[in-house]
Image (tube, rainbow, N blue to C red; front, side, top):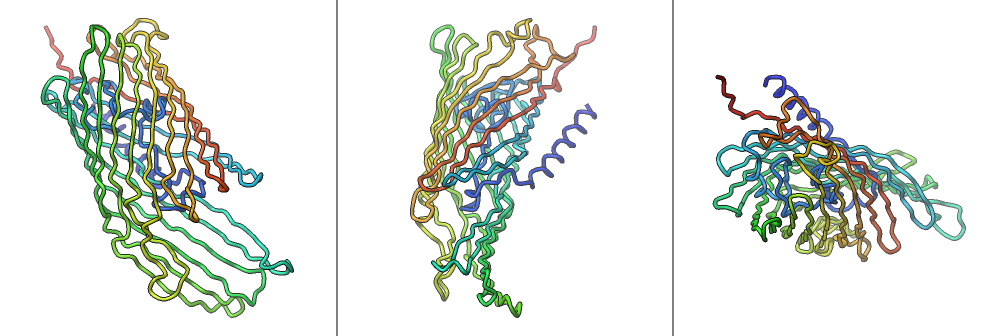
Length: 437
């Protein structure tokens, strides 16, 4: 027991350290709070994030806290995941590649009381990470150039505690309460090849310390002898983050190195949107499970601080047209011939999924990138000395999936990313009662 606790503490500490690392090189992460992280677990990712109506007593499904009520009463589940990615950027025929590795999640769950499950964990929420520059001629004479350098890093993370309760057979409800924290910095430097022209720098920064609340419902009903239909719904509370983002404008004389700096602040300028989700899964003969999720994030009702380029007190103000509502549709499924079979291949879990998300950013007066993604993966059972299928206990799993993600928008950069996601689910029998004769 002590070794297991030490191991979990070590993994949690490792996750906290890695959480501070940026897992993206995308220029799109310079907008808003950054790129929205895929908060699904290792098994969800094989189905491209399907999970609102998913119930599985062997996995931690933090996408809907109502699912915690299905956790097996004898086990403590710990799940952690990482990803590696290769991204190709394409703009006007110019192509660049970038590689990244990223911590994805570390979560745990156990049965606290009869029909009550508890989960806790650490998840990334947004990612900021980019560094690029553009160079242009000032006029047709092509004697002077100006270069814009863009860079940024940071992001937001959350640590949550969740409870799921099944008050009566088939119906469950749950909630995740999270502490949301993090910071980001974004810089833009405008410099000229002519030293007689001043350099202009803009530095954007914000620090967040606030809460995040998500609730969920699930209802499972048998449809005949071999089929189960599960319906799910989720809601994420939108609210102000009590953060004061700043914009620092610095003008530097490149000949004398004398600088003038002005700091602008928007009070309580960051906000989370209301998020609604709904979905279903259909399980046949305890072998094949298919489903679909729909999610609406009401970013269109959220304003974001923006630099106007004007003078006076209105240089850095809230822009009510910065975002649009984001709609996301996901379909996917899993097949396992026999989760309690004696043969390895019969216990292998095969997964696949696809999703599409509409743009939620407005960039230079046009829609930002839409997202199209497909994935496939499998869950490999790890047989250990505690595995005892005769008593209904199931082994730990290694969840591996490959995912292709494309972000694209008219006249803007197109990104094609290939990800390898690896998650390990430790399913340990901690709460078994042994009887000695």
